[in-house]
Length: 200
Ligand SMILES: N[C@@H](CCC(=O)N[C@@H](CS)C(=O)NCC(=O)O)C(=O)O
Image (cartoon, rainbow, N blue to C red):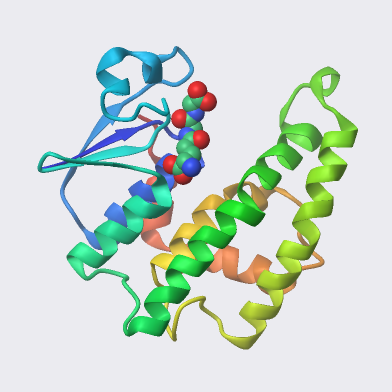
């Protein structure tokens, strides 16, 4: 049995989407990060970084959502790109998103829309946006060349990057129409809809 230590954040949903896509059996173990469950000794023993998600796969413990999905996809042969080149592209896009867009889109969304107005910092929002623009330009031009990131079909590469860009669903990304259409395609899949509806 696979245990998913989970809270309904985009990183948690990234794993839930994969598990739903792959049709794997799993048990959700809520880790309420709002009340500090991630700092409990039992959780820190699994992930000393005090972050969800974490999986326990027959005793094998793994954190970092991109790595978890790449591991599960490869292990189960589900949504894993075929051939060394497409496999490497899945790693490339997953690492790329973490470096170029992950924190930037969270910071931008928080300081432009999510936080109460009094707590928003316009300078932080602008700095984040200035980093997002060239990264989204890169994604736009890649998706103009191919509808999916690692080969001819939807794979764990698209799943990982689109799940991480969840906040983009609520931002004005009109200057990147190909990214917007691809993000919509990824989040409209039945597995993504099911995971999106999951609370704890
Ligand atoms: N790079 C990590 C990031 C994990 C992460 O930041 N998790 C957040 C929820 S999305 C968390 O556990 N936050 C707890 C805290 O900030 O104390 C991953 O992709 O799994």
